[in-house]
Length: 98
Image (cartoon, rainbow, N blue to C red; front, top):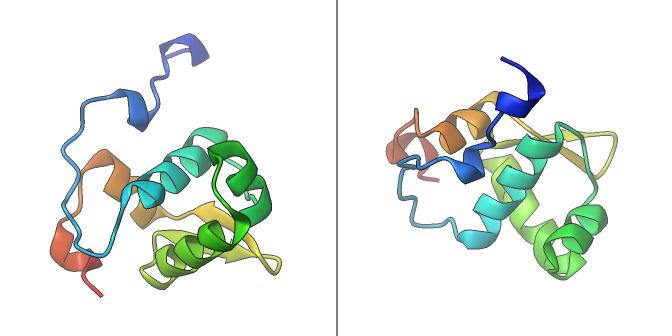
């Protein structure tokens, strides 16, 4: 598979689990981090998704608590293996209910 063949999770029809506490912002954060393969600060995420930094900070913190994000060097976040599994639709909602 070449880079041209790569299709990010956000562009593939995947049945993700419905998790009560999660919202559209959470999916967008996970998708951005998955597609970029980078550790990003809430400010950079907010700039790229057109949300406020404080809103992204709250959501990223919640995603970190649920093990969907890993925290690095203070306030940088990277998608975790569980976050990748969520985007791929390979985990169930019960494992994310916190």
